[in-house]
Length: 135
Image (cartoon, rainbow, N blue to C red; front, side):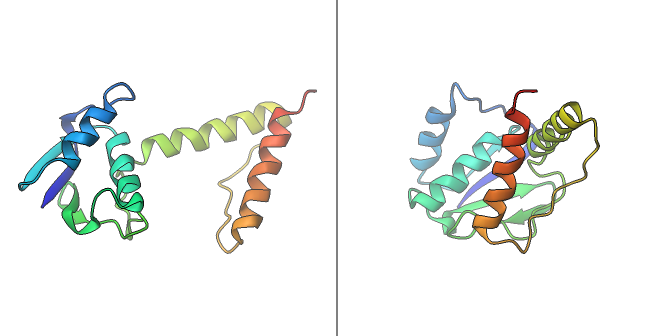
């Protein structure tokens, strides 16, 4: 079993060394714990699971006392609060600030749950079009 522990003292896997790190994980044949402090390796493992490069059954994620696995689609049910969510929070804040800068209005979180994939894509495209329009 391979444990991917997301923790402060973990290795910072970056855009510059992620391929080497992912190959190391893929070639690990014994029980091992990889400690990481950035969200990139978590997303890489999820992608490798979806692509069939790594079996979901071989990977356990750990965050503090929580242990969990991704399904065959790379999704993690019951995503723990604080687990790799800082980057997403920053992206949301960029969208909110850009909207405010462009329209001089505040927006809350955009809820696209319940929309079809096409409907959600339409909302995002519309927002991006509004941000990119020239005044």
